[in-house]
Image (cartoon, rainbow, N blue to C red; front, side, top):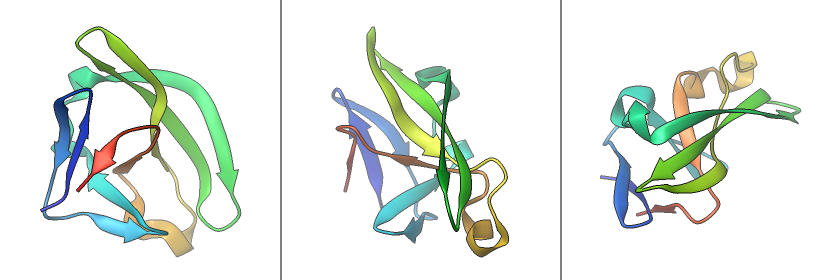
Amino acid sequence: MPVATWNGREIARSDDTVVVEGNHYFPADSIDPALLEDSATHSNCPWKGVASYKTLVVDGKRNVDAVWYYPDPKSAAAEIEGRYAFWKGVTVE
């Protein structure tokens, strides 16, 4: 079962991840929303659409834009709607 961790804390755990381009996309309900802070950052993927970001906050430490998701993905990426992926030091094993 994939588990995402950062700063010594489990961020997400689920046996229902979707792997796209080597990244595990976790269901929203597998992540504690108290660990997420909204971000104004966005990026664009030609086939997935516009990504939005969130900052992880764990024990007073912030990992800016370490979480991304596609709130309204293009049809080719519909399977990742409502799911979150991680980078910037977040370990997924």
